[in-house]
Length: 195
Image 1: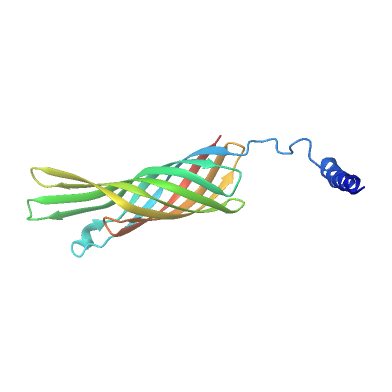
Image 2: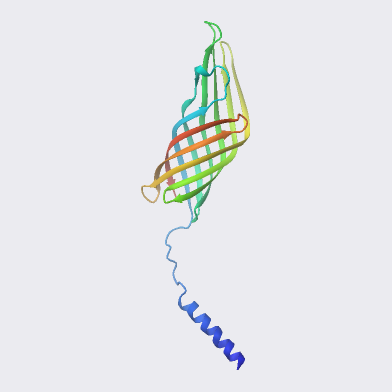
């Protein structure tokens, strides 16, 4: 008798579970996507030079390239690279001899981005940066390259979908380059292809 009651209780529990299970998945699309982005826009470098800063130019155009894996959840993982010119300075040692120096950076970052609301994202990244310093004088040019390993960035972006594959938006990023102890920010327009 006790065994019959157990079997009956098990059947009564399983019948509702079987009756209300979903036969067909309601999601017809893919659960994860990939995206490629290109961004271009204005950059500004916060210099920490103690002298010669009246002749320094710190506003330039920059470009970034990104690849993201976008699963069905709010977090996305990606890689970023690009090219940013940080500063250019020109001066005269004598009236006949002029010198010029500039610095550029190529970041290589691992990114984590989170969708906060529909089209608004916040992100952060860390990684390496190849820093190139170029100095030129009257008869020679010196180029040095440094690998900075403690770099990070924060970003906020708004990316609007035009159709299922193409998205346009804007982004603000703040970079810190560890070996330079310097900051740079950029405002960019983004074009993203999602597949």
